[in-house]
Length: 500
Image (tube, rainbow, N blue to C red; front, side, top):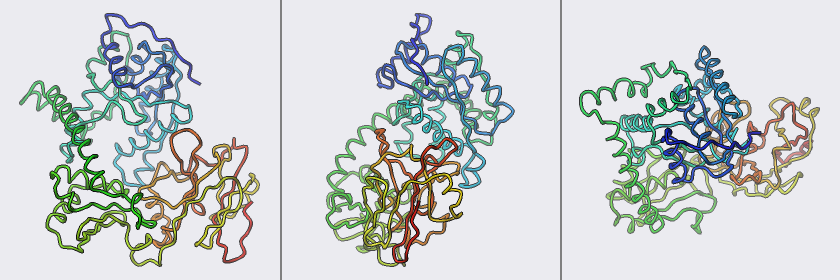
């Protein structure tokens, strides 16, 4: 387990230490004796982050983590050795984790960059939980901000996107976001620390590399030598304006939108209702942002075209017009409101049988729990390794590690946009997509529950399993498992077999 390390006092010859410490203090990124996962790649940015966090006057517990993406097998051993030596010099614990980027690319058709990013942050978050760390620190710099600005501008982005990365987002902190790569390299040189060069950073088929190697030098040489400072200044202004617009949007959203939790007639459906009279009196910029928030409430990602279509629909659309959005969501224009909903009454999908009531049960302890209206029974009971060995492949019984679960559990209907990490898969996946992969009929998906545990860690509920289908990888049975639970989702119309 990482131990608290007393950091040396900074000196006048290290102004960068004072700057980074000021960013940490002003944004409350770190507290005394925090345990911090430090993402290190062997490059100058992440190694500078490690050394600077070691140098600040705040006593912290550092754990350096290297993620092997399996993309550069020739360079990985050298990077790991550099990091190991640096950690040994600093007295910082160090570990590595491997992820299968190629598998995720094949299964979900992500780009190599995107697949690596998804798996990297999944692995870091898993280690944060495992080692009870408060935050994950990454070495993003001011140069990364500038590159991200142009990437988002090229691909199309809102003011929020062009505002750039924040120094803190949930459990992720970026203490070096105001420092340049040049300043970090100078700092490492002053400390006699070497670093690795990632060969993939020179491959021009990656858009980010073309921005760094081609676009930015062109702008600096032909248009504005201070283009990086200019962009950063503009991003700061955009961020300030974004903060103001977001506060105005929150106020307007509270006045003119009702969510399903506050609707008497919502039944089991997730809904958002936009009141047309109040909505119409708002500025177009606020109206667009309100519609965007409705999309996120429904569990779907908005596009510019969809927001534009709905804005025009509310201005001059015909009553009764409906727009079909992603993941089965639709928007219906009524005389006095725009309704976002999941189709048909009681949560039915078009063409399905009548809907079933929502599931919401507290599972206080192992036992058998009838589910009203479903002719189903949820069962969770003690099991052992022998029962796993004799269980039929593809059967309805699932087995999980008892030590990872804290009762009471929750059995409830799935929510739009909800994700989990299927057993033995490379990363997280939307439950709706998993249903597609398993070819679960649309009419049955509404009725399929999810089992959750809070684990008492203050981070909300975590998915244990889709009973009868699949467990979450985190709760799998391993060679070190001491106690096992069996989970069943059984029909009661026939005599069922008791789940051991």
